[in-house]
Every structure is written in C-alpha cells, then in structure tokens.
Image (cartoon, rainbow, N blue to C red; front, side):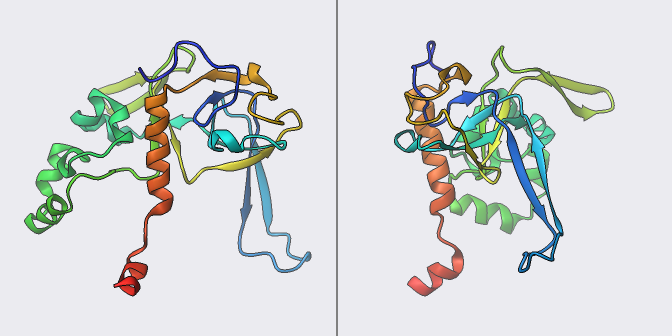
Length: 211
C-alpha cells in the first residue's frame, strides 16, 4: 500500500499538499553589490507539493516543500520500470535501470563495471509517487504512433524550497485541510532512506583523502 487509507490530522514528511506557492530565484552570477540587478524570481502554484521537512521539525511558521512533477518519457521505454514506476524508489540491478536495447549497446567493460558495482539506486534524485485519482492525467510522448496517458508523478530532491506560512506552528497546529494524501509507513521509510542516501554520499575526492 503506497498511501494510507485515512490521513492523520497532522503534517508529516512525505505528505502531499495543495495550495502552496513555489518560488525559484534565478541569477546570472553571484550578487556582490546592490547595483547588480541580474536576477528574477519565478512564482508558481503547483497542483501538489510534497513535505520534505522531517516530521519532528515541521513548525515555527516554516516548511520545506518540493512540487510533484511529470515522469520522464524514457521511463516508459524501460519494461522493468513501466511495470511499476515506484521501482525507481528502490535499489535495482544495473541492467534494470535502462531499456534492454540501451544495455545491449554498452561496451562489455561498461557492463562489467556496472555489474561489479552491484545493486544501487539508479535515479538518485528522484522519488516516484504512485498514481492516484486526485492527480490530473497527462500525456507522455513515446513515438509518432504512440502516446501514453498517466497520472504517476515524482519529486526531485534538487528542487526543494523553503516556504514561510503563518499557520504552520507545529505538525498538528497547521493547515491540515491542505493535506491530500499521506504515505504509508513503509513508503515513508523508503523516501527517508533514499533522500538520506542522496545527501550522505561521499564524493570520490573525499574517499581518496580518507584512504
């Protein structure tokens, strides 16, 4: 079960919310003086956003969110993923992360290296949310003869933003009517595990220094 059948009356990590504004600052380069005006701010109201603030840290009129976005059309060309897009949320075998024809085109040494690395997350920054009747359907272009309609969505850990909201005081003292869906405990753990791995990765240059 991906979602709980009934939502708790509290905001939790991974919840799907509606009604929150998304802002994205854009700059050409770092701004060192007030004379530099090379920036703008995009404002959007996504259909749905996901709570990224840990459960116990929600409050003090601040929350971190990320919008639900459409899947990549490449996922639909991979039979392993198209059977269940939420497989992206978990580790998989190297050959399962790409379409069979793509895997077959890899040089032997590339295949061998990936196989030796073993099972791993294939799309580190992505987490897929299972389709739900609340989500609007959209069309994915596959080829000239085929489009697929779906209402699976995903989040991107690179696209997290902070929002101040006067009514978010604690997880319980918050606009609970903005909450649409709540993850099951198992799926919330999967989200926690994957985002933890995303941020906890040690860069190769640091590994060399540690050795």
